[in-house]
Image 1 (cartoon, helix red, strand yellow):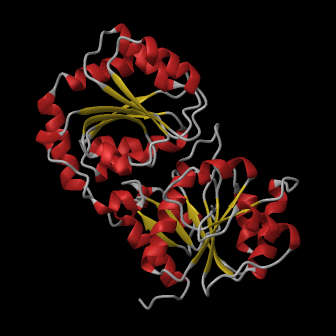
Image 2: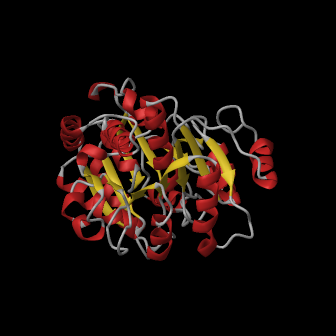
Length: 373
């Protein structure tokens, strides 16, 4: 089932025959993808914003336009909102803006939200010629003019990245006030007091293409790590067989959760989470959770470095050739320092703000003329 009672067959039929899906007054399209190599971070933060938009205005119609290889990952989500439309396989990326222009005209779309580093300057400028409002998720402001009406970046230092040059006329939803969180993290009911927390969690994102999960567990086993480790793998993780074989014979005490959908509950009872950096760090902060962030991609470096200055997390850069010994040593050190972890937790508690998605959603609805300022 794909959002709002539409099945795969319904959506694919609508594309193949040219028939129009029934939308409400405000139509919003998310153009995003998720794959084993790309990961799921872009898709999940778009899902979080979609949840926030529907919460503020239940009459909006949400559509995710995805490549075919992204659909199964989207369908694996239990908290999905919106319709899914699959791009024609033969469509090149250069042809996408024209296809989207036709789709927006046919289906009464007023807003397009773009998230992904495959969408470069030419693509964004082509979208800007479509008579819709263009919203862009960004992380580093290092890809040229954004051609956006609204820019989203929840990194602490985002206001200093120069968006006045790359998006001079855009509404800027940038900085700590605009951290995007899925609805489960907004609720806050899962956050346990420090005295009740005992879990050590390892989560390396939706895909973990380099299988750092297994490498870190192997390193912990070599060091005879004693605490129980909750191992979380995402919907795009491609190394399940190897991981399960290792855990079956490992001397580590562990619990494995595959494609876990209750991450707020898990983070809310953790005394330490070892995590790939990126959007997950905002979820960890919302759960008052001390963390060791591992930078696995260039787009994660800026926000992760800023988070370290806030005192609630530490960082290891594992881009390129990962130094697993450094990661394992950092985990052991933190687990041996309960007072340090408690201090990190207290700093996170002071910084936690779960209203960023609502603030972005409000700005988008204002942009689309659905709210009065």
